[in-house]
Image 1 (cartoon, rainbow, N blue to C red):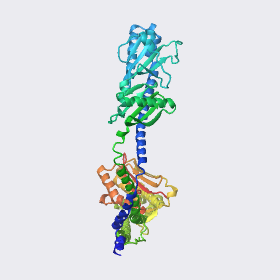
Image 2 (tube, rainbow, N blue to C red; image 1 turned 60 degrees about the horizontal axis):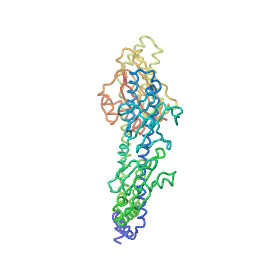
Image 3 (cartoon, rainbow, N blue to C red; image 1 turned 60 degrees about the vertical axis):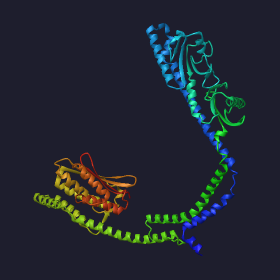
Image 4 (cartoon, one colour; image 1 turned 90 degrees about the vertical axis):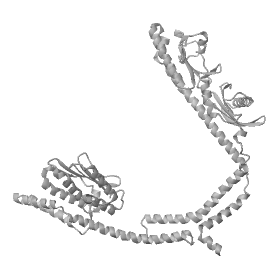
Length: 584
């Protein structure tokens, strides 16, 4: 019974006992999968080496393709064609100019690639040999044969001669013999040292390993290890395999040479006609693996099983209770408060669940209390705003009434009195804290018409069309008129002419934007920054109580604090206030 009690009350005890039960079967695990692991390791190493070899050959291919493109473009340049076809019309100065220009172009080709040793132009018409590096000289008999060097066995047309690789291009391109005659040729001599340096990426620290490059004729072209028995034997094996399989051009084999087993890989580029071969002693490649094979696989299998079983235990004793707790928190986020969670054991989760239920009950009570308090504050703020009728506005209204009466403008007087009546009826109504947006806009229009009686043509007021779908949207009262009043009080009333107040309505994807814009002058940056900070923090300031009041009531009414509310910013010549309301 005591053991059962401890088991039911402590997750730690359950985890430890489960762990001990898991460890017992580990001693019966064998090492039968070791060979599979060795093979997988060999495949991985071979795959990595093959990928490196493929990348190397592709890099060389791109270099050769680029060189052939530049070589082909050079055949059709003005300088070489002028020298080849218009020699008899050229002065010595012109001939020297074109020769120098051509040599500069050839030098640019040579310097553009580390795989180029020299570039030579052969121009029979002037019997000149123009190298990228070296002096321009007269063509000799051997040069006439060299300019015809070609090999069409591969698409790259790499020619192998004198243990060197060449790229040759003729004009005309269709030249195959003596007819039509050969006008000129451009021969690129590839740099064997440059190609050899690029093989350094395959170098290994293990003795006996090496890499070499074979030409299309399977001759040893470039190598980074002195020729030895291993290299010569592996080259013969690769040559034999390539002779038997002309379509593949790649492969890997393990071969015993003397007392050493080697793993060699080869990759052929059909475009270049070159074969790259890499070989490494397996002794160096898998050194130490046999020594630790038993312990390695025992540990691997033990860890694997331990992870699986321990994960199941964690799921059973920790994840399920935690998941229940997480779902409960998500229910709270959705506003659900009338529920409780139950745990069968009196362990740590049992205590957490009990505290959670107690917290939920207390939270529900506090939310209800806070909600009621904020509603009361909201109503008090509205009543305070209603009571803050601007005395200047009231005095000016009576003065306008007096002026109209004295003038005898009884029609306008009646209309103005009706507007004043509607204004004060709306501003002093206490029966509801919310109205339709259409009614709120109508009140703002009425206020603007009253102000127009005072300022006449000094200030032009324009109201955009309220979208029909938005007229019935319920909003807090007095969210537009105080902003318009602020525009008159702090900017427009000081303007002697060309005052402008615009109110427009725009619908976007998820909200209605009510923009109130005036040209009564910009707000000081310090004051604007202070106002924006107050709008973000919902704190009060005597100078901007109206803006903050509107902003807080909108957020409180619509709930989403991040999406709806008031923003204020400076324009080029005034202030722009934007009310963001939910789209119906």
